[in-house]
Length: 241
Ligand SMILES: Nc1ncnc2c1ncn2[C@@H]1O[C@H](C[S@+](CC[C@H]([NH3+])C(=O)[O-])CC(=O)[O-])[C@@H](O)[C@H]1O
Ligand SMILES: O=C(O)C(=O)Cc1ccccc1
Image (cartoon, rainbow, N blue to C red):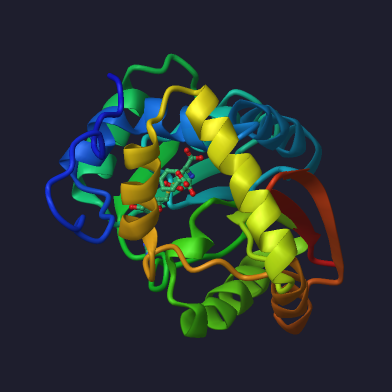
């Protein structure tokens, strides 16, 4: 279904929430808003093949409708491995469960409706935060990254995709303008783009790439690389050494 959530002017928009209205149009919304989204999913599958270990768990934190969960599931070659997908939005979790039930692959998946800040984590070889950490309050991010690092087995990885910010205002403006062009080309009107930007203010709080690197190092990840970047949408691969 097509995303028309911000198509009409109805006064100042409410803060963005992952409610039923968003869940219904989410695949269309994320594809038209995040450049390279589908390539990132493909790479999450590739990383799962390389890093998932026998007898461990893979976590998809902030799973929405389970697109990353399926990328993991379809590439989970490790023996006795299972998947835990977590999201705190009832509308997303309900739909995600249906997606998993309708998928024929055999790897066991548990979908939990929980806050990723208190969901239990352990014996993990692959953890995915695909555009989720950006919605956690910045002051709470270090603790979550520390818990993820502690839950990983040696050699285990975190795939962390985020919309980042830039400390140089000129760079921030240029990248924002290029992203607006991208959204326009994907059929969003200037009104839709402006209203969504307002709705996301103080809800999606971007860190800079350096803030991400510092927090990952502080959490104890021994290796970090930014393997993906298109405009302000980037992804890091961080490994427990
Ligand atoms: N504290 C939290 N606890 C649990 N869930 C949360 C929390 N905060 C946000 N969420 C959930 O994180 C998801 C973020 S969308 C992820 C896309 C997906 N990863 C994908 O690969 O398609 C990204 C985006 O919309 O830009 C939403 O479903 C929220 O309910
Ligand atoms: O649309 C945007 O401008 C974004 O930053 C990406 C996005 C995609 C889906 C939900 C929230 C934000």
